[in-house]
Image (tube, rainbow, N blue to C red; front, side, top):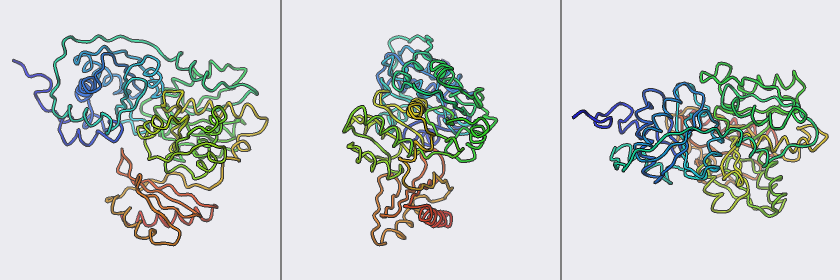
Length: 466
């Protein structure tokens, strides 16, 4: 009898490799040494078995390896007995829409902002309920490791459907843009916003928005700049185009378009914490006293503003599975992360960069002023932005920082997610990346001088301890 695909161990099915690529809330690794279609197929089979699904929806991004991996995952899912609905090219929030709209568990093939030699899988249960290491991902990983799949009574089927227009229509019902016409520059970074933005802006119409598209061509090699707008150098083309065209606002999306960053009319980058505060205020206006989630690296201005408006701020660790779980526990109306993820209860508690963009456009169109004038009321403390450093011993570096700062007067520390050090005049957080060998620093202060001093002091200590 010939060996089955799982009788012979391949490199990607090696236990050490599997343990390395199953992260806190997704699967992510390099292709083909860490991820390939065989691994995708095994993961599809394990996913169906763990989730207990009879139907699954699957989407993928523009990376050259994504269609093949999505097809292999679908094959594995059918081998486990589930019917698979393929939605083809999609942003991650479009996959979440499909999961919620169709009431099905789903899988999205993307490595977000990572370089083109990476790929990954984001999985959820029905209605976009997240799957993380503590909520099913560990079981999926262990089943892939064991290859102990239960034979299905029958093989599932594969069908295709297009949800793009329904997705666009749904977003606009959640954040309708009316009022004055806006000139908007949108930088898709050759990622999936190049697929979703045309559908959304087409529904808004030329009478409402003058759209200036930048890098809308889908290209997994991301030829113009990395599709990671949290890095300042990746915003430069957008900033230049905003100034060149006299646009009211610039939008920057990451590779799978679940994150959105802003550039104002002056070409200045806007802190995601400022956008979090703006959207929180808009959502609280519809539900006074609502709970708002913010992660621990969001500016302290966010909980201050939420409280001043009568809402209830809740602090949580970084990561979509943690944010979504806390939103479900507290029935929060909205959640924001300083890394550019924004979560909406009316969008199945999922994150959507496009919906966040529509909210700020709606707020701006209702005024006669500029974006910088609109946002001034939500900007209170200078922030450093996220600064990444490669370190050999992240835990050791964080412990050394706690030893330096923990004993200082009026300083408090906590380890909710990495190390947070707070003082009445400043705060900083350092935490390891879940997907890369990096230590991430975020700092803020009561003024620019204070923030800069703390940022530089902490960064020097991090990099001296490499």
